[in-house]
Image (cartoon, rainbow, N blue to C red; front, side):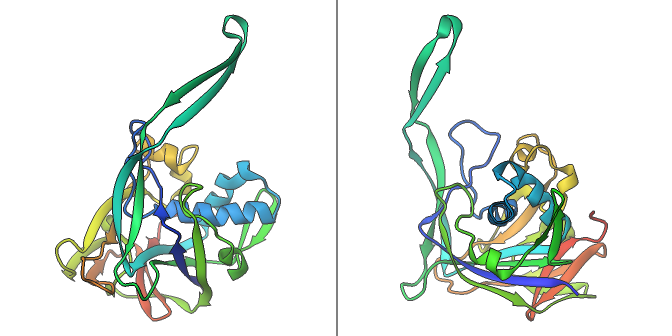
Amino acid sequence: MPIGYKLEVEFNWGFSASVPGLAKTNPTYSYPPLTTVLGAISEVVAKDYELGESKGIEVMKSLSRNLLGITYAAVNYIPVKYQDINKVIILKSGGGKNAGLKVKTDAPARGKTIVSPLTIDNPPILIVIIVMEDENITCCNKQIRITPDILWRIHRIGSKESVVSVWKADRVNSLVIESSEIQTKYAFPLDATEYIGGGTPGSWEVIWQVDPYEPSSWMRSPATSYSFGQSLTPYMVPIRPHRATRALSVKLKVKQDVIVLDVDGEKIVGRRKTSV
């Protein structure tokens, strides 16, 4: 039986997840890519199992191979993207003719996304749903068990400044269902579905991100893959209209080779059945 987890994550201020492969003044995403969620879990796992930071990508790949579905949706906020100027100091030590310490400075614009609350009564929350084939994965010759305790200790999603607090990390009922049409309020891969109806203009946005289900096609890392245009897939993500206080769902026709999941009574689009 699939193993499902539902997280409620509060942003401290927002996040920084720069679009890789562009100039040093990188823009940011409206949502942190799904691979950064896998990275957040991998960071905790690598520390717990004494694998070291360098093995984080290997943990991510092991998690990806075990995934049936991963998605998210914002609650009580709209993302606001902007760029600000950051002073950067670069220290370089050389030998030979260039012996000694050299100092360079720069002031590039860095992209950030503020999560702007829609009401003052509740915090800005990102709901994350993760469905796995099994709670155990194998990485670096170690058996690793993914538990709610690991998910509770996620502390960032995105760059090191993108601090989050986990409000809830519950194991929930999850089933693979046979359904060609679903109603969902969660992000979904655009190339795995056909739009039927629902939503309003401006309530959803397309973002390109590295496929979280295809680790075999990643290069050195998901960021490197994005830079070279490898394993990219378009995702529809829900962007809240100014006065909206809850998700605006859409009706979709899901392609035959794609898994559909019922997670605690809510429908999400999962991976392709042919994914390895």
